[in-house]
Image 1: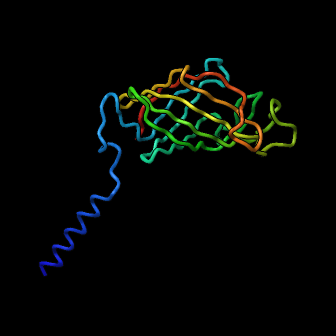
Image 2: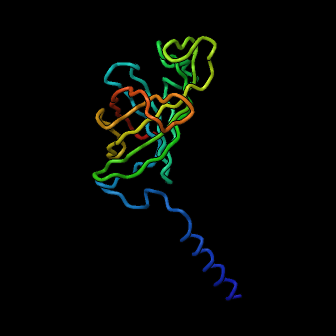
Image 3: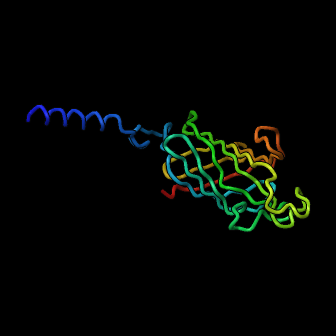
Length: 180
């Protein structure tokens, strides 16, 4: 009986030690903050186009990212004229950078919206136009996240290859807070 108990205790300890630990348990400091969670951001392009909008980004413990925003989301209708584009949720990855910063890279599918005169011909509504590629460096401090305009890049990429150069939408500044 003692052998079964000892075997069970050792097996349980082994399972506990091999289970993934949450990011909060991996240690953090001012120069190594815990970015894992869901963040709600206010995004403002310096050019004023598109107009300011909300964006929700989830940084997962494994280094992946999911994103959606109030402008390109199909529920919002479409990006304002003359673009009139609709986008999928974004998918990508994040990594730690020195000085309490993180680097994020994500890609969204982009589709022709209704009356998209800037990039789509009549009758192309709903067809995939290409991709939206977003890259930024953010400062995480406690439950706030800040992106300087100089640390962001948003490009619209036409065609089937998401890795070719695209049209630069210009810099965007963002500030936000941790939702979860």
